[in-house]
Amino acid sequence: MKVLITGGAGFIGHHLALYLSSLGYDVLCVDNLSRSSPEVINTLRRYGINLIVVDVLDINSLDVIMSRFKPEVVIHTAALVSVEESVKKPEEYFRCNVLGTLNTVRISTNYGVSRFIYLSSAAVYGDPIKLPVSEEHPLNPKSPYGLSKLLGEEVVKLYYRMYGLEYVILRLFNVYGPRQFLNPYSGVITKFIDRVSKGLPPVIYGDGTQTRDFIHVLDVCRVIQLCVSTEKVNEVYNVGSGKPLSINELADLVVRVSGLDLRPTYESSRPGDIRHSYADISKAVKYLGFKPSVSIEEGIKELLRLKNT
Image (cartoon, rainbow, N blue to C red):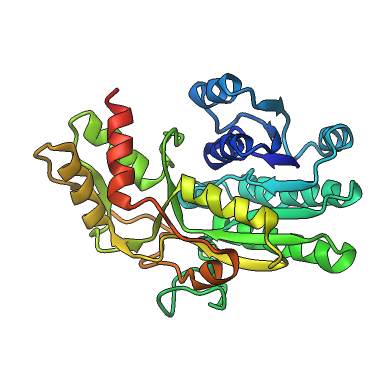
């Protein structure tokens, strides 16, 4: 089966490309490389994954690629993904996450793609009014990032209503794992691991009692592969561990696993951050057969081991 992955040199995208390729899928990645790293690009090359450098905002180039490759499934992972950055650069987020999704959906429809898988975000829910958060929870994003991902969902659903493009939407909670891009807007686990590996204490924004649902990128790849073959399509699914973890608990875990004697430092909370969030994953468990397999402690041990080798 031919699968095209947008954002294929990004964090989730490249892991997905490696995973699907290992299962025998014919994978093509497209990416503008703006949020990639030499390590990721070299990893794709080492495993023989085809990568074309193109931006999803360039619809003409997407058209050429689609006409030549003719994928059966398109998995749209290309996105800007920082809540904090989106507050500072909302225009960039709407261009990439909404227009980029529109371009990819349009071209997929034109070339008869049989299934479109869209990676959305738990940020579409905003501040939860009930925990755990199910797919039926009201959608009230509180950042440009969250709104851009929600608008992307609506684009996908519109093209299903207009043209019958079969879809699956996955609302990802906090994804972590190896080779996650490190920059000022990186996820909290990546930042904690980087600091602790240098002998520095984790930095916590706010009081640290805020909770998140962390899911390993390998489990995300597994659930995406289930979506490629499932009959339960034109649906939205939460993807998380189904377990809350406070940022204080996360910091303590990273420090404990490292074996160092460090105490976190605290700074002011950031605009757009959600206080508490964890997923109700019962729908994905029931209809996709999804079951998270990597515990947070196993994941942290893996990241520290890789960082220190």
